[in-house]
Image (cartoon, rainbow, N blue to C red; front, side, top):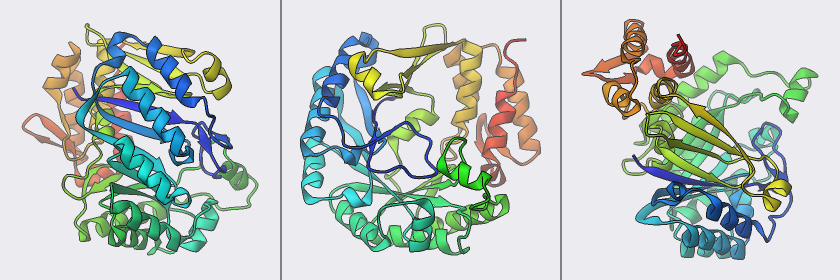
Length: 378
């Protein structure tokens, strides 16, 4: 299985009203790389084996200055092995792009930048509380695409959007040089500023039908520009798919460093162990090994692998292969669920490899819930 390394950079320059990820507003701390080094040194030897992908997420990794970028990647390479030819990705905001940072990323071996554009439309950017302007985001895509593979995030289904907004954003991103689009439907997450505004009636709630229409329009716009859908929310030119994200969907092993980062490793009996680091930079800085763990039995790990693996609409899942990997006896009941979904035209069976159908892609969350409903405890 491929192995991924995720590093959570827990700082942002401002708080977007819809975001519920862990981060703190302000400048990055100069001792962040040191804390990462101490966490990595304390991890099991199995957590330092060669990595096929490295991903800096957050938060906003582009909040790291040039020295901070070099220190973080120096800590990673000193404490773990990164394979030759590894995909090395970094999330960035358009307003952070400077020649100095671009050079620092190139020196560090970054191969791919995921740019948090969300929209090029000025009215939508104001609704989302974003700091950049549309033209500046286009310039950032052009600048980055000259050095790296570029993915652009687009948020769909924002209340007040015109129907053509999201597909127009796709067109602008691809025309500026992006070879990958990640399209996410706006979700009103509990505890966010957006949720409070919706509850007070200051802004309308999301409309499911409008979101579905926007999603279909994005799928069509990506196809028209040569980007194939390979995951429920992801579209790419051939060869520009996110290898790191495919580690997650295939339930490959991954190690998460930094506050709030998640890890997953498999046990010899076919089960799995999940780990979540403490959601506090102050605590993490003083004690980077502070975490919680959850142990999954082979049956539960198998069912999760099926549910998440179906999100990869290109690869799908080999059911018998997954069952063998997890040493589970639950092959028959899970196959029965998937075959039932075939009958409802939500999945298809390609000789034992199950994939979401064209209709199933629209109801991916419901398909996952159906798989996860298999009661492995009885």
